[in-house]
Structure formats: C-alpha cells, structure tokens
Image (cartoon, rainbow, N blue to C red; front, side, top):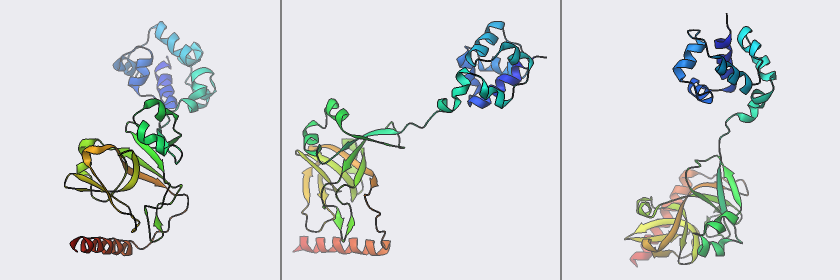
Length: 252
C-alpha cells in the first residue's frame, strides 16, 4: 500500500497549502491531486520525483512510510524554511512629510523621485490605497491644551478631487493649496474649501475647491505623549459653544 496520498496531504497541512496551490506547483489539476490523496489514483513516477525533490524527501519514505509532522520539519530544503515562507501581512510603506521637507513638498508633491526620498513609515493598513504621513509643526490644531502638538504624526488617505465635496464638515485633512501645506479641519461652503484650525486665534483659510492640488483625509494619529482623554460630553459642549460664537460673530 502506498502512503503517497496521506503524505502529500500532510505536507499540505504543514505548508499551509490548499489543494489548488499545491497542484499548481507541480502542473497538476486539483481534481487529480484529490484523487491521489484519497487513494483513487496513483501518480506517474515523474510527479513523484518532482514532489520528492521539491521538498527534499527520500522517494522511498514518501511512498512507503506515513511521515510525521516532526519528520517533515526535519527534512532539508523547502520545508525547513517553513517559518520564513509563511505569508507575512504586507504593511503599507508610507512616505512622511517632516518639518524640513514640508516647504519642498508643496512644489514637488507630484514628483515621484522626491516622494521616494522622503522618510517612510510602515503600518498594517490597506497597501492598495495611497497614504501620506505628516509631522505636525505648529499649534494650530490645539484647543484647551488638547489636540495636536509639534512632533505628533498624522497619516492621511488620498482623496480624489471628485470626492472632496462629499467629505463631512469637520474632517481632519492635510491639503496642498496655493504653495501651502495646511493641516486643519475641512468645511465645504458654496464650492469653497474652508480650512479651520482648532486654535481659536487662527483665522480660517478659504480656497476654491478647484485650487486644491492634493487632499489627504487623516485616518490615523500618533502622539508623542499619552493624550488626556477628557469627558466626551464636555468636549461636545465646547464644540457647540465654539460654533455658536462663530455664528454670532458672523451675524454682527
């Protein structure tokens, strides 16, 4: 009785391979491999040799002994690198704008060679999307000792121009506009992008949406200190109070 079927099934288990993936390694059909594993069919000698060589297993052992997991892990070749071959989750490599590169970024933001020279960070986020990191360099986004301080880092996801109008008011964004790089909250009013700081002494900046060269919606933030998490109800009341004051000032 051949142990070939049982052994290749055990190999697949150790390697974490599906029948389809294993079959493709040796130019087999998945159904053919299934027949081997169930003992309904015997492989050609060429197939046996390929599998034995690939995993550095003695052909006689592959055919005449029921191999254990420990035995399989001791074989030289591909199986001994199993831990290295495990599919690792690919982290997104994110270019990061620092205080020293911010001025250059506003003119070279669309230059691939410049972007490649920026320092990078890696995060377990969707690698198919485009992200940009930014090191905070001012106190515009602080309020009542809360918010973002210099050296904090935010990570934004790129927003297509056609989607900007659909963003919720108050969304944290990083914007390239009129040779400026601005990190604030976005409010869309009558076709204009109003960029508002959390600091009460900073005036709003307003630009036509069509003037925006790049906009990144902030998705993640990294603080150089442990943030103080205040009362959420108190925070909401402060925001409402702030907006009411703004409305009163506009009505004057």
